[in-house]
Image (cartoon, rainbow, N blue to C red; front, top):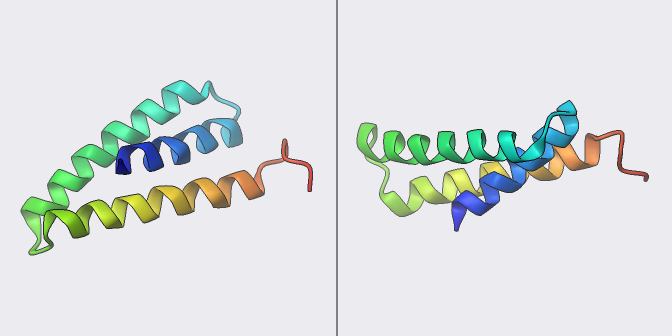
Length: 74
């Protein structure tokens, strides 16, 4: 589930940078999966908290980039 939120952020990043969004979504999702594992192993954060950090970060990144993108008409 949190990887779908990260994929949303990756798609928004792709559109913002004018890059094919599937590639950016894949790269961001794989990076998030590795980040969750790294957070869980290197800190005293539980697995659920690490997932929550990534979930909120990806969703926030997506919302900010979508609202800042020039292809969205306000």
